[in-house]
Image (tube, rainbow, N blue to C red):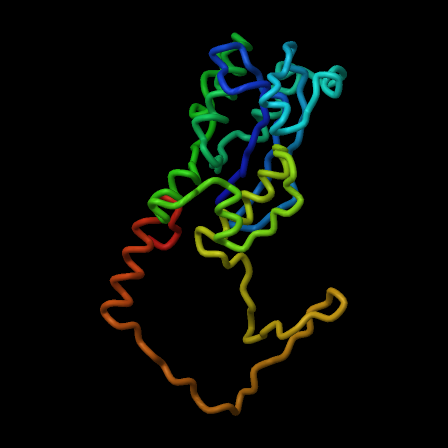
Length: 231
């Protein structure tokens, strides 16, 4: 079973070394490339003021966070949720740096995120696949035709949900298969109608890939790196 967690955080500022803290965690679970709905979302009380620049990005105020739990209150549940998964994060050093900082502040010997999970950085993947182009999340949404019109402000769970769609399209796109020779042909009022392929149709013509096409395919899989499932 392949368990992946798309993760994003919002913070009080840019540098944990300057005492900045996590104020929101959002996670979306994939098992075998399928969304499970077993997501994780938590706002946190940081015990410090939020930088004005950060507030402009995510819109989360200190007043809103006053009654929220602190990281040490949710650490056990959160780390149990992450345990053994592959974390998929856009610009992973930022989020992992903050998570490692929060774990260090607990002072209970939990180590770092990499002691509990593996980490895949979709920004690194995107830069290999699209060198010389913009590869922030908004740019990837546009490139892979992912709807992000609801993203007026950053939000950890919203961004994790958007990243899950981008990641699936970056790494192949297909998340379901039509089985038993059945094909979904149309949807009416949210219900898919299914037609079965006739058994008396003539045999399909088989067209093999050329050497150039096979070479281009191999190059594309190489660019996908560790995220490629077909190597």
